[in-house]
Image (cartoon, rainbow, N blue to C red; front, top):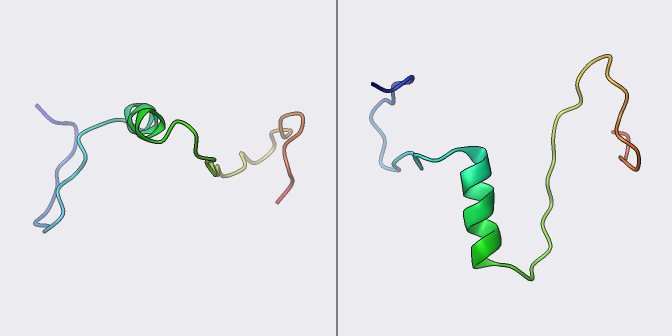
Length: 53
């Protein structure tokens, strides 16, 4: 049983987690740079070396 439902679409869902997608793309393009962006968590101090928004 799926934990979500998808409406009608011409583009199918990937059926993989974000981590699985990342691993697949890294394997396909091992020597390319990547830009990874994440939203800040309110009240949480940014990690060392993180660029403030």
